[in-house]
Image (cartoon, rainbow, N blue to C red; front, side, top):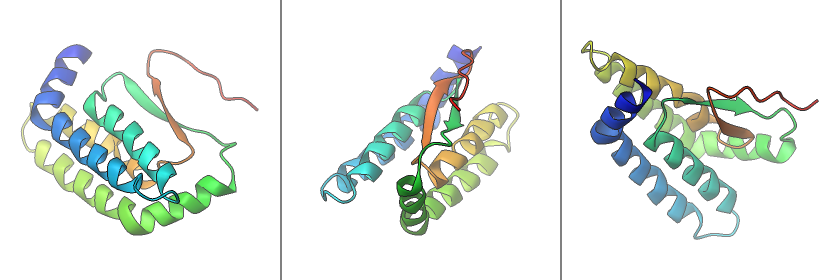
Amino acid sequence: MRLLLNIIWFVLCGLWMAIGYTIAGIICCLLIVTIPFGIASFRIAGYALWPFGRSIEHRPSAGLGSLLGNVIWLIFAGWWLTLAHIVTGIAQCVTIIGIPLGIANFKLIPISLTPLGTRIVDSDVYLPSRI
């Protein structure tokens, strides 16, 4: 079922979202200061391409740098991306077939808000956090 949902997601919106995040990552990598945002954008692009069967895990040991970076990201890009995911998710939830796609779009909201200090893991594998 996960493969079928990923294929439908890829065709309907995953490819376009991944292209958008990749373009944003390339733009961010033009300046040395914004390279961490570019790398995070490339990570999100891979996640947006094939989201079913994967989830987001926050790393508590990320540190102050990721907190400051997330605040900068939130001001300049995060809230726009979140708004786009909310609108797209609501539009996809209008049909019964689109409900899983809308939920996947809502699942992308946390990483679009705070991409630094998170990692994308397979949902099937339990990875305990380090203390």
